[in-house]
Length: 193
Image (cartoon, rainbow, N blue to C red):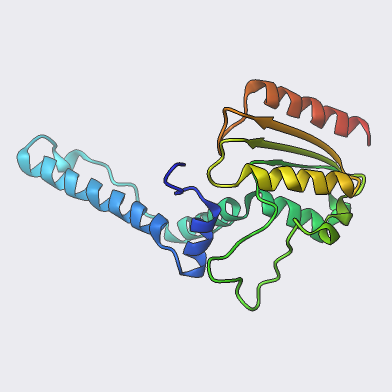
């Protein structure tokens, strides 16, 4: 996390072709593993013929990579955007360490339809909607202050926000206490149906 490797900006940068850190790390790890296996085989510490190599399923790996990449890069923004586009589909939304806007290093692509949820005009759709938000105050990928301001805008728009912040957490899983609060929030949202 401290290196920014899990940053949504880095992952988005890979998709848009301006930041290849993620690919460099993945390919460096693969090449290091291959060289290590060859060296261990050469020195006799490993019988290379005894290794089972899983057959490659290229199409499913590509599709899975795209789905995973979109999920990682969109994160909280994807939740907010999905609700914004189809508000009648969901009764409530929950976001853990998510960003309410997407930033691009050199500006958004011309054909991108970006909605900035830090703008009050874009939060009106959340009126009356139960929203659960968790954010670690030590998050180095998504600034905590952005989420704090966004929560205030959601409340101003009339959303029913339950906000959990943890001082000792970063861009990671919340404490058991927050998880229990989340489950209780889900139960309460179901009872309102």
